[in-house]
Image 1 (cartoon, rainbow, N blue to C red):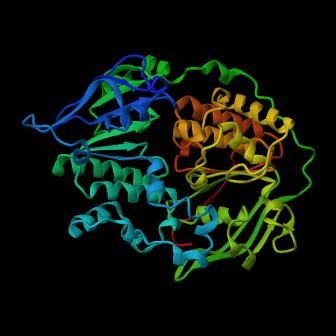
Image 2 (image 1 turned 135 degrees about the horizontal axis):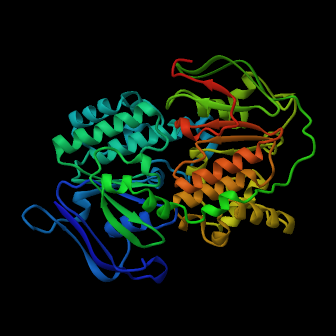
Image 3 (image 1 turned 90 degrees about the horizontal axis):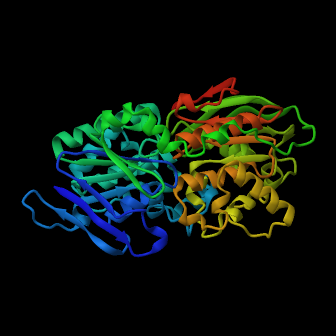
Length: 480
């Protein structure tokens, strides 16, 4: 099987690469497309999939005998944005996964699967260890569980080429190992060729044979896997576009003295849905100024625990919860809680499907809304732009949030977290999809922002992503 982009020039000027695109996927090759956030990686794969009209050139898909084949029969693609296709984000809302009284309107995972070879489906779910997901409501899955399910769903039609956009992010270490092994198994037994879109060279698995390096909408070169990994100069050039800014001091507006002793005080917390108990008798105290890592495998209840803190889960009222020294249920509103918390998560990113300017997304952080329903004032606009400067994204302030890359979207949502100078930061997988440089930038911003009495809860599946200021850990298991 051969798929090729030959001298392709996109019809619309704002989408065009610096030079005509030439790239060929030959039989037996497994590719990684590497580049910084906003470099054009997704644009390149979308071009291959025929999502954009061409001004010049052509896209060819042919079998081993040279016969032309429909691209849709040969190539399947899975990206974070594809979760929109299985969760109706237009007719559901972010907190709905915690409001189980609405569950009659939510379909089960198994009901989203088209008619397929049942034995092949069972084999895939067994390989990936997601048999238990089939009976769950689709909007109750964590982002990691959704990624697993999307990958399995894409494999049901047995494509010859599978394109996966950052498939490892959001997966715990065990699941990342399972996915790498699954790639090799599928390549060996089903002649599947893999194309991975990655933002970090350390995510390149052993199965990859070739690397396509992309920078600023230009193909830098095509390399063999080991050749690319060993070329430190090339990697530095590819990612560290503005590395001098890492040395510049970050200036923040500071709050007045914080007037509480405990940001969080949980006593004997339990949360159940039907016969499924996610949290069972949990005690947790986060004092003012403490920095915590919240760890555990996919499905262990991390998102559920955070939903209790942020006021999104109605089961908070059935538990002994104190936030900022005020016991829940004593008259405070959800907005009283949220105004002191800066929060980001993969699930929030998923539901922020808003065709508004990036600066409007940042400014929505002042009002704790998903979407902007109130006009921000001049002072708030200045603060929003200051935070876009800090995160290196001021140049996209007037761009539609939906038109920028997923990595740039993540930076916009991070600026939204910090814009109101919160007392407590809750960062659930904040480095999702970020390239090497932006991971360094964001970690440094977090560390400097939290250097005084700010409290921090940091969730990740990567040990190396935990900021150095984190000194305490809460580790959840699936059997809480």
